[in-house]
Length: 231
Image 1 (cartoon, rainbow, N blue to C red):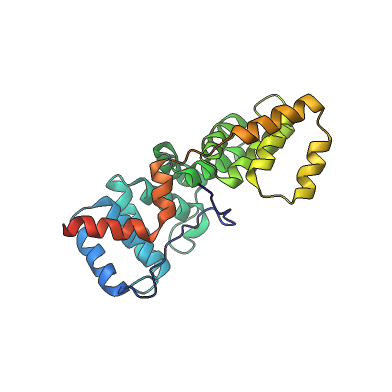
Image 2 (cartoon, rainbow, N blue to C red):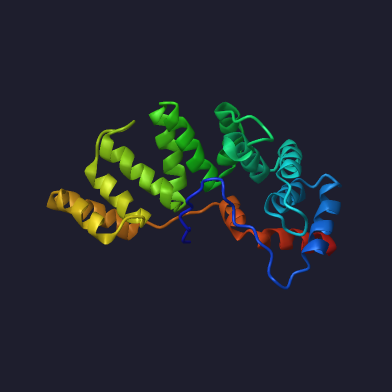
């Protein structure tokens, strides 16, 4: 499973196919959401957030993410955390503690992007141990920015002994740097260190959770939910 490196940590892929009747899909999702379906409430929030089948309305999106979170949906909690993390300007006051609280809900449920964001928030607080822990979880799922974060942590010796071999391996696995930079990093390793790192890279494979795969599927998850309710 290959992830696309996201420039903005609170971005989620969510778009309807060009031939879809977006308004009908939105109305059907609202009807399901009004019955208390937590996942539907999250999707309605995303539709308002992105202007799919309805006008873009961040305030309505925020309200639906609140409902979804209260109903127990971890992706709704993630988006609620994003609003407290600066995305909700003019709707809610930015609050890093609230952002961390809600993103932790999603991170603990297994969402790689939330785990990466949680790592950043802990790192900003100076809690390197927690940051490393969550970067490791997200990195194990194959999230590029988390793998890069691990590389930087082991290069600097933050929360763990400095390990240039591990740093190089995670740097290479992230695939975020040009080959020139990878080669330059390899050049500072001893032959045993490089062999150890290359062995790790060759044997490594990402293990995304079901929640991460669901989030990355975007619109397909919404379509599947609607189909399941029509059976």
